[in-house]
Length: 217
Length: 255
Image (tube, rainbow over all chains, first blue to last red; front, side):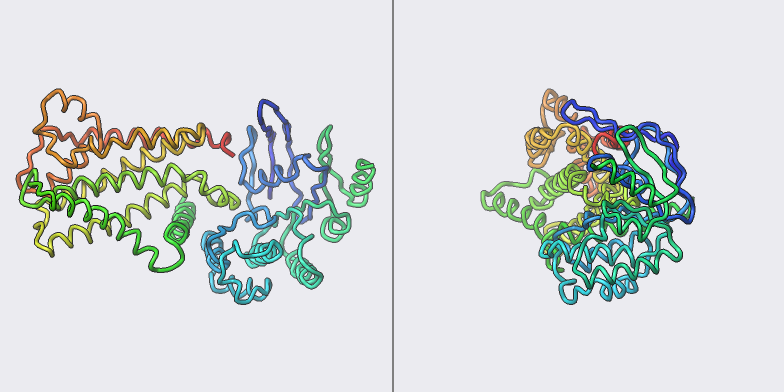
């Protein structure tokens, strides 16, 4: 279970204060996959970092009783001078996983071959994304936080990630940020809409997408 | 509780391994440099002073006298400088919610202390083998001095890291302010023999006390009138508490 109680978050940059979340209380429904939609800058990624625990709210509390992933995005947490393999080892160590099993699984999924022994800084962004995605899928989480990641890679990779994803959905929950209506429709069955005037919960995904499209135009 | 402690140990352990790779390069040879560099720089200084024909200020060995000074200062500086850069260097790590910035600090303290333990053993071991020193008379005192240096570097570095995160010019100012430590820490002279006016000022320098502490451990009859063990220890504990409290207090501001 993931629950936010009275969570507020604001940023002050160069004297300009921006309130992202204001007293948000929300309990994520168990066993449902939740979409997070909103315009650029609405605070989707901030909300996700607060759910993950990589960012602290200004006030309020976050309760997690399940194993939540880090926010899966475009390969943020890799150390560029270390090789792909070393990065994979590091992450599986901190999550207490069987390192060799994770390496095998990443190797099979990301298809990086010998590049896995090269420093991350030599990788293309596509390779990095494949590695990041493969790594997170190799570790078993109860809840995966996904920030726009399904949009990367070529067709073959997309198919592959869809497959893994669908497998994961059997026993894990996902919370997903996406601008893509089709991705949202494929994976999510309810959602949050971050609007300027507040945050709205939609029990019905089609309803959410319709309102989101209307808001954009 | 037990579960949390295992998690903490696991995270710090992984960070130590990662830091080893990141700071010493990917080859096994990289780590060798971390040990050779401090040892070699002391060796160069000692050679220069020997060639000039300086007499050891205390005991028979010039090398041992300088080493107790320079190695101690190097250890302290290395800790303090590495910790000071810690928050900035580890931003990418914060992607993983399991890792707190304090974990990165603890990992660096462990890694550097372990490295310098090796440096100390190799260097002093080398001096003994070359006949330039005898075994330390009070090994337990040397170990205490080592631990005290680690604590002081930990505290000083953590406080600096917090200050740098709030005001980044401090990085340069700190460098300038700590540069004179080379002359103020009793490396070339015996602090107890200085005039009382000089001692009254120099005894505020905690590194000087650490150097004296090491010497009391190595020499059978080095009687320092300056040394106070409670001063550097108390300061270390105070700085550690202050630094960790500051880290917690300003954590939200830093992100």
